[in-house]
Length: 254
Image 1 (cartoon, helix red, strand yellow):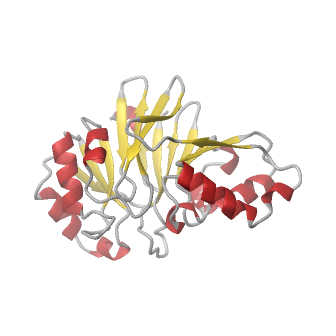
Image 2 (image 1 turned 30 degrees about the horizontal axis):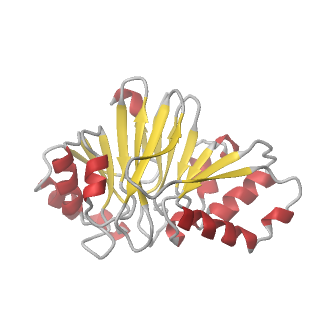
């Protein structure tokens, strides 16, 4: 079964029950963690996922709410006996700083530490991130304060397509990547520099011909009202869902 689990749905400011936005994509052969904010160890455990079953980690950009959980995740994998390698993907800007961050913890001196393979994602459009028989992930630039990527996840069989915007202002690159996608998971922090509102996310979804729009990376205070959903419905004619922590999306049924 292919499944996408919303491990966290909040923007940079969290609250009990609402972790920073990060996702787990699960297929027959892969467990791909997308971003690594808050404490992904706890979020993965709550989702019923063994942390050592994660095969790949994609880091979209080097902001704390997207990478701060990376050191504790790797340390806990080591402490719980992981022996097999893990693959980590990101832009060169991101990976250079991730290795600098890990060096502060002297991670190369941790005894019997498992192998970590770093793979640099080129900064262009429609760049291949990873691929196997079941899954292909490609990236394009997002429009944020620092180098950042959006992702398109293509699943076989059935040609199912899921796009994740990550943090971005309204972007034609995101819209291009999302063309005819089954699902667009788009941030809805607000109409702010480096971010998008729910209405702007809806415009991208409508223009790209997306089947279903999920709003994510929103202020947790917005959970108390329907303003975002109403804003998005003013422009987008498809189905709109607000992502919440621990939400599971069965991708086989799209």
